[in-house]
Amino acid sequence: MVLNYIWVSFFLIAFIVALGKLIFLQDYEVFPAVVNSTFDMAKTGFEISLYLTGVMSLWLGLMKIGEKGGMVNILSKLVGPFFVRLFPAIPRDHPATGSIIMNFSANILGLDNAATPLGLKAMTEMQDLNPDKDTASNAQIMFLVLNTSGLSIIPLTILVDRSVLGAANPTDVFIPILLATFCSTIVGLITVAIYQKINLFDRVILAYLGGLTLIIGGIVYYFMSLPQEQIGEVSTVASNFIIFTLIISFIALGLRKRINLYETFIDGAKEGFQIAIKIIPYLIAILVAIGVFRASGAMSYLIGSIEFLVSLTGADTDFVKALPTAIMKPLSGGAARGMMIETINTHGVDSFAGKMASILRGATETTFYIVAVYFGSVNIRKTRYAITAGLIADFAGIIAAILFGYMFFH
Image 1: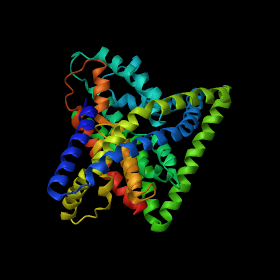
Image 2: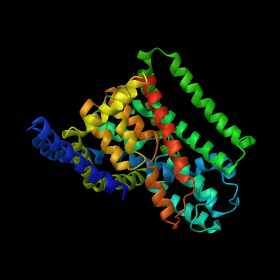
Image 3: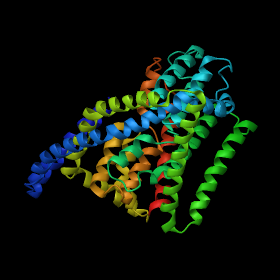
């Protein structure tokens, strides 16, 4: 329903703004521009989806090899002791514990197709332990907020979109996204832990959080010590090295498990082709709506208003052009994707605004969508502080994305 309201609002606001420009400014080009944008954006949506089929097939084929090779199980063992302490109300031998760990492992690897069913399974199993069936339990809230923080090693769809849109180095946003989403996850975890009075000074929790924070802090310190002109180059090399190393590790695990790598790749690639075809109507719908919103002048008024407010603080306003992506992300992943694509088409895929929009899209998750799907699957109506904590994590991710965007690309 949220996406429905957003989509309709784009058209209605565009019509009102265009009508105002026609009546008060005698702008006779505004309505032709709006109508032409519907055709242009419909064409753009189809072309992107067409190019997307090859890249999605490639990556989902590789991801299928990693999944079958046991990468999810390896991650489950690595993070198991940590998650057990974050969910003290769930017995260690309860099925929910395994589903939770598997869900986060799949999310970290960007395996959305595997993560969502595992997440719904975990939510159902936690509901069995929930004494008040229409109210979210502490464990369910922790699970949901960590999902909405969007921690992922490989932000696959963003890198794929940047590749399709012609980025010189599609992976140059990889490290900034990783840093921003880490900040979002940590803030979300701490927020829920404070609500639930979880002991964050437990030795295991401190070891995990401290270790990750040291690693992230070391990465930030290293890049801050580099000259500005070297940051982008080093980031690109490091990002591509990490991603290709993961690909080789997937293949190595597959060889170790003696699975048929070629057939496994083909199975995953088929899923990629099907997904790319399925998104055509959704991508065209949101791109056309955003296109008329911009062609009417409404987007310019929105960006101008935000730039004015930001300028009053004395801060640089270059990031504002990418801010609509951040505004849309908690509401709708499709709308955020459309905003990112529209920003890139307007300002350039390798422009600061284009890179910033990519980082902002990867910094958080679709909070309201996840709340609706996960809580709706078990008929929970009283969400308590879940949305508040999720939005706090989103805000932290957006702030971090802006800071890291300036560090790496401005």
